[in-house]
Image 1 (cartoon, one colour):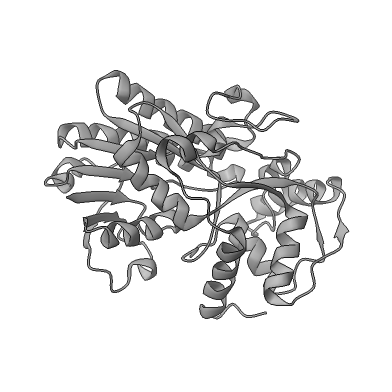
Image 2: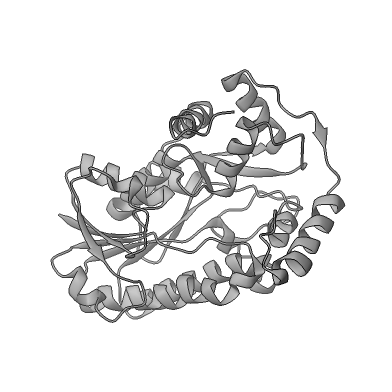
Length: 326
């Protein structure tokens, strides 16, 4: 069985590729010519250089039976709005159309809980959908519209299963993700205070397993939240303190302070060509507790629920191995 994987150089993709190889799959990975291939170094896979929106994807997919469309642009900067829709919506349409023409038998499309949204005071599952206008930021909106493309493909008869990862943690977080950035700031002692918020965390290797389980057991047109534990940021920092022996910040910061700083950064510094410190939409998101119920994926797919302490510890060790020492 040969799998075509987009986004293989990224966090989830790098872990998925390793799992596929372990399970005996041949892997062909689509990578941009400018991609950092560090996450794929020395792996026995076929590299196919190309772009998500190119016209030659059908040819590149020939000979593959399944597709994992993991690639997406993650950015909370408002200036990236056009790129977000190009990468997460139009590219999804193009990739799915190419898969249909290449006679790919089954597609697993990586959406996000960002596309589902949140409901104040509630833990939501796959049956909930926030109105798109209520989703904060163009990243979330672009993932919502990307998921609509996947559902539209299902309506035309294409076999597509949708997975919605929550917040993964673990090794191979090369960019890093916002959660990886929190870990790095903690290690570097650059986090004197924290925002009172919460999110759903899961070991990234369980997310990779969830993709393979969705391929094997998922129902066409269904979406599955790949998540584990709803946990406060304070509890995450306390766990990092136990793992590393470093003290956790004890002070919460009023949200208006980072909101004001982020607004100033994006509206005053960015137009001058300076790099903002925090994205305004990212700070706005922290106003909402992002809790999810992954019991459907556990029940129907057998999604593993591995220890978050182990996942955070492995993330710390991976970052330290990269030279990001406190």
